[in-house]
Image (cartoon, rainbow, N blue to C red):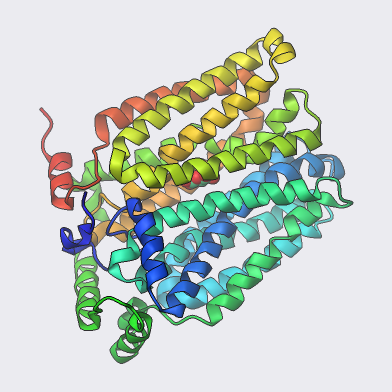
Length: 486
Ligand code: BGC
């Protein structure tokens, strides 16, 4: 096993968002190293990064339960419900685009402080919304913060962590997202019978938002950003502080040199490089993974699981309770995935997971087609949802984020990753804004059969295009991908 791929991939060391040196596989060594290190600063930073992912997950999940009550309370029809869910995603797209600029301009640290403050404003606005337009407006505000957090949290942490644990961060982040979703389902469960339940569900998010803003005020700027501001002495000071108490020999000068090299290589490459010639196949793989990750309908389950379950005849309260199983399954299988990604390989997990979720989608389609099944086998819908979410969590969920941080050369990596991230948010938006309308136009079962078809196409795309990246050098992967096809 490649225990320390950073030794084999020197060009991957210092970099932009979610840049791993060791892939997600190293989450176990990530926790191990984290335990070993004496640096309180690093531990605090990891906790704060986890809040970033948690916020991302919380807000994508919380709306699922809240929606059941909002639709009656604020008289929201199908269109209005879709917009309540989806404007957050529009905000997230804008937030992800703006945050790259802000993170360079005012620092990663203050961008995250602002993101926490905006989040608190958004959460309060949603909790006190008196009508649908106000709710939609504040969901957009929340989205700005979620998009920013999803981009800057991994960026910040990848720039402060020692190279040997940077790799575990991508998976750590996916784990934080799924934990955020589960947390939101538990909050939905806790408040389901309370007065003003949906207001509490949406309002509780003020707590992690405030924790993020205040927490970020207490951590340092990243060395990378300080170097970009020509503050090399400050960068060195921060690095020394971060690596203090680090049991292993730390090489602060070496890290400073890596930062300089990475910055030079980024300055000499352009985004346009991705669209022509050798690198183009890599762009397609990133975009394919980003779009298929959403087009197989994952977030219809995350956002609408209680709505789907309520359609099987369950009460609102029982639907919210059963949704908790969906959240737990998601977290448990994400843990299984991060433990297996290096051993089994990304490609195998991706393909197996895609087969599993496609079968589950077909079963959901059949279930909603057959009255007999609906009357006599109500459990089948829940089982299919659980198989679906487990299959996603074991493959496409973590593999997308991992692969886009592994397949691109240093010079274009941060740009390519932001293109893939924005494409992912945009595809997420398209699915969320059409799911309920599709249900009306081509029926609920028709919608699931449509996603089944997309699952088949996704499988064929992955089978023919996506390489194995675990335990291989970057040069090796790129050579395979960019060689002329026979
Ligand atoms: C996806 C999110 C999704 C989550 C579910 C992530 O990888 O990007 O859109 O909500 O997984 O666990």
